[in-house]
Amino acid sequence: MNSTPDNAIVCKDVGKIWAQGTDRAHEALVSLDLEVKAGEFVVLLGPSGCGKSTLLYLCAGLESVTAGEINAFGKPVREPAPERSLIFQESSLFPWLTVSQNVTFGLSLGSANAEERRAVAEDVLSKVGLLAAMDKRPDELSGGMRQRVAVARALAMKPKVLLMDEPFAALDVQTRAKMQDFLLDVWRTSNASVLFVTHHIDEAIALADRVVVFTSRPGTVKEIVPIDLPRPRDQFSTEAMQLRMQLTELLSSEVERAFAEQEAIL
Amino acid sequence: MQQSAAESGSVESGAGVPVSRFPGSERIKKLLPGIGWTFLSVGLFTLIWEFAWFMGWADPKLLPPPHVFMGDLPSQAKNFNTAQRWQIGTGTSDAPSPGMAVLITIFSSTYRVMLGLLCAAVVSIATGIAIRYWSLFGKLTLPTITLLAPVSPIAWLPVAIFLFGIGDAPAIFMVFIALFFTMTLATITQIDSVNVNYLNVARTMGASKLQTYTRVVLPAILPGLLVVLRLNLFGAWMVVLIAEATGVGYGLGQVIMLARNTFNPGLVFFTIVLIGITGFLFDYALRLLQSKILYWVPKGQGSLG
Image (cartoon, rainbow over all chains, first blue to last red; front, side, top):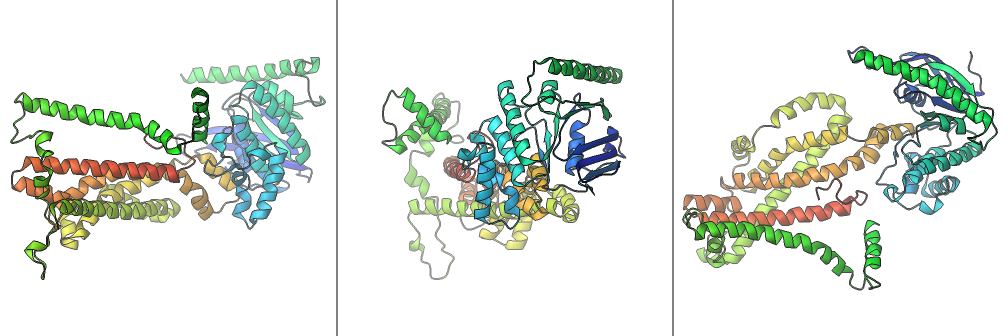
């Protein structure tokens, strides 16, 4: 399993134990293998607390593995990098900055001058359809708009991989559907790979090239389900219904197992 | 923006009445209920006191009612003597008028409070940030700071006199030392509670440690720090009176000490009123400052009202 250039992220036998060496130590991930190809849209699906977000933080380089190795474009992941942007469940925009200042925060850390920053801000904000909101503050925007700004901020760094940690979980159903379409547009034009965490089966079916189903804790890959449906996808097509049943089946046994374990502890 | 939203709301409810002909009047209208309740609250308190006096429950020699100690301002003002007769070349008749003397007294106490508060804020915020920025510095200093934090400012009083003698310096030092430890600890608490996502974003974007602190941590802790500063303003006022009671020439604490030594409860209460009003005004000023600096914090959040 050598990492070839067309693999964006390769996880080899990855394990993560939180608070290792203390009495609060617990295993989040165990012997996990996963490849994300360049330009691929992969959804991580699993019950709550199964370690799928942990995997995202490891891929981002914000946490380090306790076993195995993660490679991004052939190089081991040691620390965070702008090419691997993480987008959080809640808006993580800086409330003291305007939208355009937020979007160009990463550029302003370097040597980019005001004109370059403005050009990039206009470019990425028009990609997410928020050019008009450029000089507003985050608290003047709706939840969905804020997440679009967060995506724009990631795009400003020209990422090769977008890591998304349940980014639409806090949004209402209608906004969520719109945001999924929006994300697919952004993904198509940016050529970046997307690694997207969710516990929503419908969301996985709407978005993914491949759905990676996690086991309950400690998490590892239970099954990988490819979704070969053309986009935009009809949620109510026979194929989508079948996939929904298949994924529900896969998930429910894990959820039951997780519940049984929790009850055993009590 | 919230203001504009509120204004557009009042356009609808105001049935087409032009709103911003007098831009200030809207704000005054919003302030009015607050002012009304303040007067009502103070009035009620005064009334209970007066009633107790009227019924003969409160001995006027010990607890003179407000109309007694606030009734004769000129004679109260005569107790405020800021003439520096001990200075060579100053005649006994050179003293400022009693009214001026009251103002000078208030000003000198305020000056000590403000200078002490400013020094304490600057030094303790810098120390708190340094403790989290350089972990070695933190390990070396934090235990000592935590040990000294619960020490009462009164314990520092002799130290202040040993080090600075009498005058402004020991009073300012007292304010500083009373606030420094707790404000340092408060700064550290603020830093530790910065939204971890903000820090993760900064790390992902490639921010250096210095950039993370100046561009993310500092603005993120600023709202909390201003609340801490406001709370400590009251602490500073409490401490400065203790310091002034020991001999700093003149000040509100010195007047209270004089009232105690001459058995003048009316003067005590009069001075308490002066302190209350001054402290209230400064708190109000800090609140205005807060809303100017923290343009991004929604009203009623992180501002204690």
